[in-house]
Amino acid sequence: MKTVKKIKNFSSAPELVFQKIDDLGVTGMHMTESSMMMMGSKLNLQYLSENEKGLGTKYRWTGKIMGMEMDFTVEVTRWIPGKEKTWETVGLAKLIIFSWYRMHLDVSETEEGALATLSISYERPKGILYQFLSFLLADFYCIWCLNNMLNDTEKALKKTN
Image (cartoon, rainbow, N blue to C red; front, side):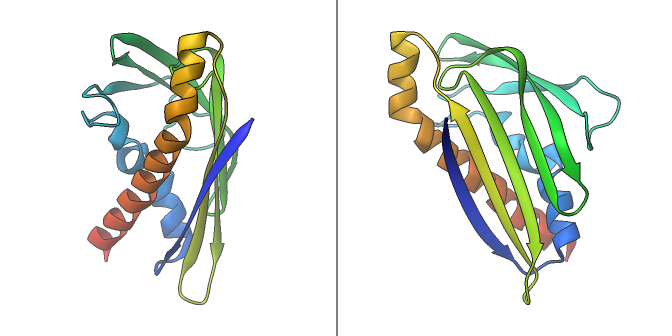
């Protein structure tokens, strides 16, 4: 298993930082928009649980990237409001550069506001083509994803101030 981590300081209260990162409408949108990292494709998001936040929340991502089907379900497995969240793929996952992943968020208070630590841990897929793509793209994709999530959080916080 490999882990990629990003840390960012925010000049907002930890609870507010957590709230924005916890909102897929803020931090998941980079996957629903066509971009170079998404190879011109985008994924669709569907909530599978009544709640959109909190422990046990489930959602499903579907779509195609480079003609390859993506279909995976994610569940929030740890959720301490304002402080910590863990979410990971569950069940059979059709992914390209990962076979499974877990994301973790930790938000702590600082003198200036909040420090957010966000990480993606993943396992490489089976199959020569997928392993090759994972070797080439997985870490680069993780950094892009984490940066997007943290930068989108910063933009959302500026709109609320």
